[in-house]
Structures are given as structure tokens and as C-alpha cells.
Image (cartoon, rainbow, N blue to C red; front, top):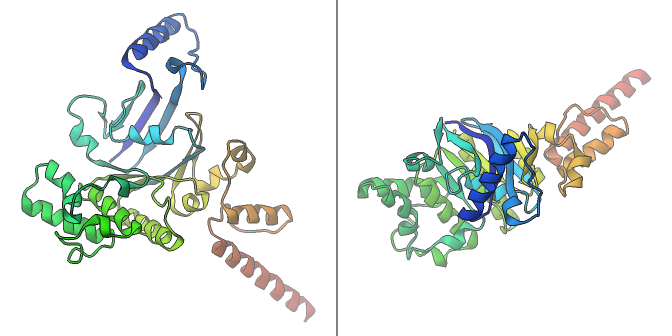
Length: 318
């Protein structure tokens, strides 16, 4: 399944303002004038997203980053039709998500927002996870099967978290897994996650990110918004960097993090291990990799270089 953003722009304006803005755009286009939409001006000129162009391919892990207010949340809400572009189009396997009859396509993209446990509402874990499948019109047996499968996927025992278990008596990490299971129960082909590890303690955070990595390894296409450059570097195939609604970088983590000074200007950093690696390379250390996502990787390569150098010195002494 392929998701395509084709010159997508979005402005948070009401319907009348949108019509007026559209008329002005047409007038400017007729006069071959460049459309002006300065960030931070009056509402009909404030674009939360400007000219987003990218393709998400089946099985990919795409990371999205940017400072607060850069357009990340606006972008991901276009992925399953929660928002429709002011300009441009979002296509899922060639189908425009803004067109009538797109609901079945939209369901193929599951979005998990920040702190999804705050959206738990049903009296039991079972009912909360079953809510989506029931709305899809599935039979009781099909709903039951999906609840069991999705709970197992997020590491919760379906027998323990049965029809009597209340989600409000669980730990914060377990509640997040229940909310996560509710999205997985709808069997999305693309999973979109907005800061999925926000607010978790270190152990829960590591476990949750490992769960996401396992889901991706099973073949699920994943999109993850995160402020953690270390997580993005370690998990993602490709990154999209947003600033004031515009895409400023798009590429592999190694390509994106090769611009540390530019990223710093917009309030972003590079992975901690990469900062150390860059400092070592500046001192002439011939590290073999372009990108170091973890300190473990870096330490291993430094140890290998040290051992090789030591062997060379020992050989010369003989």
C-alpha cells in the first residue's frame, strides 16, 4: 500500500475565509503572481502545511520531526482523512482521501495520537479494544478474535485482560498498550504514531519502542513523529524534517543528520552518538560509518580501530 502526498498545503481557516482565500489565489495565479502566505500573518494567510511532497512505500518506517508548531500533527491528520488539504491531494493506492466514499481507504491507516490512554472510555479492556471492530460491522466471533490478537500483539495476555478487566485500574504503560491495541484491532496497513513513548519511564519507553520495531519487522508500514533524534536514527528508514509547515529535509537518517548546523538553527539536534562521532572525525579518527544511532555502535567501532592500531604498533615493534 502506497501513500502519496502531492503538493499538500493546509490552512486552519473557516469555510468563508477559505473561499475568499481561494478566490485570491486564483486571481494571483491568473496574473502569474507568486502566492504569498507568510507564516504568522492573519488567519487566511497562516499555512500549517506548505507544499508537502513525499511517497510512503509499503513496509517503510518513516520518521517525522520538527520543532513544536512545525506542522507535524497537521501532516499526520491528513494520512487517514481527518483533515483534507486546502490545496493538493493525499492519495492512498491512487484513491483521493478527500473524495466521497474514501472511508474504507481511511480505515487502512491507523493513527495513535499522543497519550492515547487519555482517550480510553469503555468500562472494560475488552470493550475498549472491540469498539473499532464493532463499528466496522464485524460479527461477534470476528470481534472476539481481533481483540485477542491485538492484545497479544501489544504484549498483553488476552486471558488476563478479559471482559471484566477495567482499563482504569492498569498502569500508565498498560493503558497505553490497550489504546494501541484498539487501533491494531482494526488491522491498519499503515500505523501512524505521534510521540508514542511520550511520558513513559525509561523501561516502559524502551519496551514500547521495541514493540513498534517488532510490528514494523512483521511487515507493517510505520510512521512515527518524535522529538528524539536517537530513536529516529535507530528505527527509521527515512526522515522528514518540517519547519514552519515546510519540508526542509527528506532522506535517510544519515543524509538528514549530515546537516547538524542547519538542524540546530530550527531547534533540532542530531543523535548524541553522532555528535561524538563528528568530533572524533574532526580530529582525524577514521570511523567507518556515516551515522551512529547508538553509543554501543560507536564504542564497538572505536574498540575495533584501537585494536587494529595496537596490532599495527605491536607488529612494527617486532
